[in-house]
Structure formats: structure tokens, C-alpha cells
Image 1 (cartoon, one colour):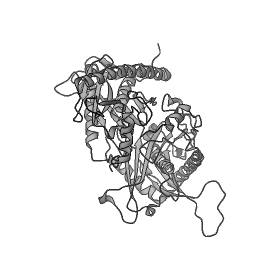
Image 2 (image 1 turned 30 degrees about the horizontal axis):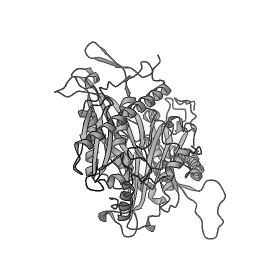
Image 3 (image 1 turned 90 degrees about the horizontal axis):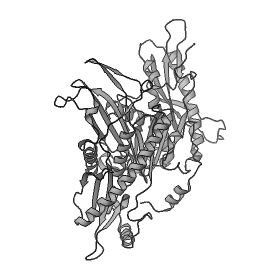
Image 4 (image 1 turned 180 degrees about the horizontal axis):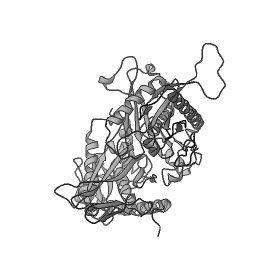
Amino acid sequence: MSFTRPDGRGNEDKRPLHIIYERLDRVDGSARFGFGDTKALASVSGPIEVRLAAEQPSKATFDVTVRPLSSLPGTESKALATSLRGLLSPSLILSRNPRTLLQLVVQSLTPSPIESYPPSLAAACINASSLALLNAGSIPMTGVVCAAGVALFRSTTEEDIPALVLDPSESESREAVGCGCFAFLFRTEIAGSQPLPTNDTPGARLVWTNWHVKDGTSDDGELARAQALGLAGAETIWRAIKQSVPQMDNLPPPPLPSRSTAGELGIITQSDEVSDQDMNDAKIEI
Amino acid sequence: MRPPSPSIAEKDFFFNALNQNLRLDGRELLEPRQLGISFGSELGHVECSLGKTRVLAHVDAKMVRPEAQRPFEGLITIHCELSPMAGSEYEPGRQSDEEIALARMLDKIFRRSDAIDRETLCIIAGERVWHLHLSIHALADAGGLLDCASLASAAALRHFRRSEVEVIGAREVIVHDSTTRAPVPLAMHHTPFCVSFAFYSPPGVGREPRMLLDPAGLEQRLAHGMLTLALTPQRELAVVHKAGGLPLAPESLMGAVQVAARRARELEAWLDVRVREDWGRKKVEVR
């Protein structure tokens, strides 16, 4: 279909990805993920001490908080937090740390006039949470959850096949007839004495979606195509995350003097260390 | 959950070091931590760091109906809520004393001290005014959260520019896009900066209490008294906050004020350079 997106991207092109491990001081793991300007920051603390009322005898309590950038947190944030909790739980082995707390806080960094989480922002929140969990490294995980947003545009003539686009921007999500975010859990199933698989991307299964169509006329075929496009997007994100993990412990860029130009070119490789930062870390900061 | 109180070993080590005029991170007694700032792609979106403490501030504006008693003034709201990201002692839903103190101080510093000229935010008297909403999110609390939050707020308010509006007749308002007419910075009467000090009992009889500028995490928890001053670079005090703690002689207090005044001038100069740099990079206006 001859569908052109406002910013000239192809239907299957994502915006440049930003993966930054924030190294926030008071939490165990933290990371920022962005599709272009749609960004989210997540932090993970755990296993830490839990309030007696929330303690569970056989597994860790998993608590998720989502905060919007400029509105007061309300129903939408609570709904996304509940969804995040549900979709991340299959990837975590919570039974290893009973009577403790795993606390995940997701901060949206994308301004919007009302409290809403369009598909790309929800996907950014999910990806940032996975990155923060990997960065913490303190909770055993079975796999990594990656997500991508998809939007559906229909043309006015009946003959044309509707166009599915990957990673819609906020304005595209508003104008689209249908949109949603698809989250997949990537994990390798190993049975018995099988050798480890050598192919690139492990198997994926869908763990969550909020696909909805405004005009009510959708069919299973359309959902399946949208899911396939979402899976393709999530696979590239998984590979980007895998590439960023070996550089996770490199020193972060110098403390924010003028970092606004960093990150427009894709994955951040934080290899330009600063000698100041070395010296500061060597002194005791309590 | 609250972090465990400092252990006896930490306390002893800290006070022994302080008796020799040494700080745990090697700074001088009146030396502040390193500052950092980064601007987002939107005007008014700022992330500020003071050592390892980091705060995010975001300003946005929308048009609303003004209050009935003040039809000529715009509205300003400041929203500051601490999440467990800043530290696991901050629980969502429950506001601890520190959070309340932080929110109140920011309110006093920026809203009650009339830092922003509210009359310039009026579009049509009685009908439409700008409502500025400042959101502050603490990303990491390693001591000095109030200083960092107020610096981030000042930076966000300085950096922000609202769209240019044109009023035609008595009721029609045209809001110009930022690509047709350059957006307008906020009219600020003054920019207050917050400086915190921690005080410790004198080591012996007849000596002065020790004073540290910009206390970090452990220093803040072990302080016998805290003093926070909010002042402008023009040496006008906006807020003096000393709630309980070690009694201070007037000389110590005035000494702190002098140090804070110097610091406020430094912060102003630094912030001005950074904001203009970013405006230049974003090409906000063409002259």
C-alpha cells in the first residue's frame, strides 16, 4: 500500500534506539530506553526488606510503580503498572528469594498533555524495565521481555490492504485506526541433554498485548499480522539489548555536562571514560 | 523501608575525620560537589545532578480559566513526589516528613516568593491565563536533594519558553507555533538558589560548631543541625529554613549566609551559560 509516514520512515522502520545504563546511586539497577524521543527510565531494587503486611512466605513480592512525566499518577499509570507486573512475572524466578521485595519504578520521560501511554511509550517502559532487571543482576531470570508498538492505518478505498507500521510516534498513534503494544518473552528452552542452540535469537512467546481497533471491524488475520510485525520489532530490540550488555559496567558518560547530543545515533557505547570520573569514584562517597 | 541508622563504626570514623577537618569524600569543608546538567529535546525539560544526587524537572504550560479572585494572574503549580527510585526509604503513597518538607520548601522558594511574574502569564483577563505546571522527579537521593531539586527547578523555569499568543479583539486568541514565532521565555523577577549546610556540635568547650557545605548522604544523616538558605544572586534572602537541631550563634548564621551568597552567584553564572548554550543549540530564535 502506498502509505507514507509523516517522518518518511518505512512501515517497518523503528526510530533510533537509545539504551543507557543510568547507574543511579540508590537502586540496584537502572536503565533508560528510548525509541527516538519516546523514552522511559526504570529502576529496580531487590531483593530488599519488605513490609510485614506485604511479605509472602514462598516468593518475593514484586511491586511495580509507574509515574507519568507531568500529570499526577492516576488510573492509566495504575493500569500499566498492573500489566507490567503480569507480563514481567513469567521472566522472573521469584521463588528463589522468599520474604523479600523486588521494587520496580518506571518513570515516563515523554511529555504529554494528559495521562496516557500510547503503544510506543508502553513498549519503552517494558524495555526499560527489562534493561533495569538485567542491570541489577540480583534476581534470577528465565528470559528477557521485549516489546514493540504497532499501528494500523486503513485507506478510504476498500481494495487496498490496510497498512501496519512499526513503532508509531504519538501523533501516528492518535490518527491510526488501531494500535497496540506487543510484549514477547525471549527464552531458550533446553530439554535434558540437548546441546545449546547456536542460532541468534531464542524462541519468543507473546506475554501481553493491548491491541485495540477503533472502528470495530477487525479480524484474526489482522491481529496475526500485527503480532508478526511486533515480533520482528521485538527481535531487533532483543539483539540491541544483547549487544549493550557487555558494555554495561563501563563508566557512564561524564556527569551530564552537555549530554543532549549523545544517543542520536543508536546504541550508546560508553567507552569515552573521563579521568575526573575515575578520581571521583576512587574517593569514598557515602 | 528506612535505611538502617549509621553504625557506630561509621559514626566514629566520620567524627574522627571531622575533628581533623576531613570529609569522607575528600572535599574541603566548604567545597560543594560537582554539578551537571542536561537538557531534553523539549524546552523546560532538565536533568540536574549534584554529585550522585539526580533530579529531573519538567515545565509545561496550558491555557485555563483564571481564579475568580485574581483574574489578571496566571497559575503556577509545583508537583514534587518522591518515588522509591530516589531511595527505598520513600514509599509510594505515604509521604514522609522529608518529602513534605521538600515540597513545602520548593513551594515557598518558587511560588510564594513570586519568582515568576504571574501577570505576564495573563492572556485575556478573567478568561484565559497560562497555567504553568512544574513537575519534579527525584531520580537518586544521595544527600542534598533540596539543593539539587531547586537547581533543577530554576534551570527548567529559565530554559522553558511558552508559545507566543496574539489576542485579536476581546475574545480571539491565536497561539503561534514555535516555528512561526519564537517562543517567549518566562518573565522572572529573580531566580532563587538553595544552599544547605550541616552543623555538628563543637568538639570541645568554647569552640565553634563545625559547618559543612552541601552535605552528602551520611553527612546529612549524622548532622546535629541543618540550615537551608534560599537566596538570589543579588543577596536577597528568600527563605531561611532551620527547623530544630543545634542552636546557632548569630555569627555562625551570618557566616553561612556569606558563603551561600557566593555560592548563589556561582550557580547563577553557571546556569546562565548552560541555558544559553542549549538555546543556541536548539536554535530557539533567529536574530
